[in-house]
Length: 441
Image (cartoon, rainbow, N blue to C red; front, side, top):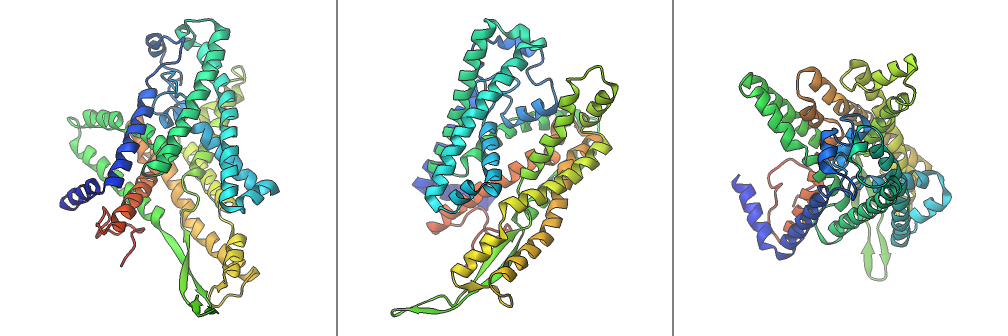
């Protein structure tokens, strides 16, 4: 505790870092405030009596967690930053198959600016389409009684407000990344997930505090071990040595050093679980359009019950498959091999060019296997937590997308704070810890 208190004092003494953190908290506070501002034409009390706009579970409940409850409350930030994430994924997938986007990825800073601009345009288009679907979802069913204005005007105004809200949230995320601390887009998602954690913890404590205190301690202990495991795998990497030959330019000698090419065990991050979860929601959503089909309803009940053992097994294998898929499109061994060759480097014992690419690809395939299995296990841990009697709201934080995002975003933000402190000769939060990422002297 003394070390943490000292780190906090050091942060406060560094004016630039202090201003960045306060700026980040201020923008995140604006975002949280916006989630409680209801859309024009919606009676918030009537909507609450109808059970909100999510129906309680399924893909709508999943989206509601990422926007901090704004989806179910019909807030102006109901779609949050998710359309931007969707647009980013689409652009990234296009970069793997479309030559134009591949060319932009190789153009350095100029190419990144164009990709960012295209992502923004895509965000506006996706948000407009999703806003129409959200409007239809509000107007029909039990939530229809909460709409107090005309259908046409409500649709037009909701599309405009939701699209503007998402663009504003995207702007907040970019401002945090530029002038604050951490990745702004990731922090916006994280603050929405954190909004559900206190209530989940409170419900779990009040349920088990008097009836079974030992069970409560066991739950907290297992949860802590899961968090430690996620930290370990998230920071785990295989470092490939790359030797650079000496070369003389004028009177200066360049190269002659050994550097390392880091390959992460979990190079795909949290994206495979998001992909897999989206795919698993599709059959249940389709089944709602065929209420008279017994086969479709049975399929919908199977995919609509995340606490079932069969669902968990299928979800595990889908996560493993998507981990390999996303790693293949996000990590390019050919590009790595070309960069090493262009810079005059080589991997000891491996020829430049094709053999270097095959060597990197072989290592990447091997280390992705334990990473994919780990992601699959983390993805289905909430299912087993619910089977063990943990409440559904707290079980979501036993693994899955929510816990992975919380841990990884926290680590990234702490490492950025660490870098600011080390540049000014202060010790950071990770002094004496085994969390990789802090430079050793």
